[in-house]
Image (tube, rainbow, N blue to C red):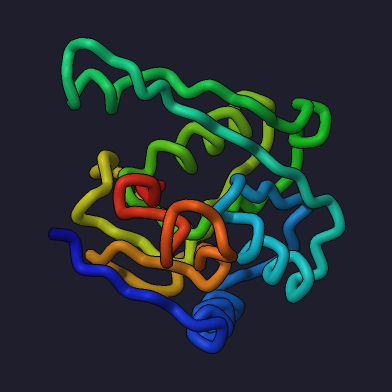
Length: 173
């Protein structure tokens, strides 16, 4: 079973504080990946004074008949993505909570590059053991992990799923 870490807001603040000195220069825009990147992205855009704040929602098909390897190779479905004109010729900070497999943030990075933007990738946690990308990693990350991370915004607020709103199966980044 995957080791689990449940973070507090104080620990999230420390992770944000670990990221801030890593940034050099100004960003023209930020893309927060829903849903995991919304909270850290909001904290970072405020701290970095980024005014153009955008979102991207990416879904990977779950129904694949050939097996796990084929499932990981599925093309992403962009449910929401900024118009190319908002990205062209801009330095764009892409934010998510965790880099697990790296599929989601890499798909967003590729779309930003295709639009003519210069993407830089930022996550709170980087899991190099789970990454599908051996020659790619986040530009900025606050911590390494091999655990399933439960962030304070993921704690169940009374929904039908129990104490935690997410199981390790859903935090795959």
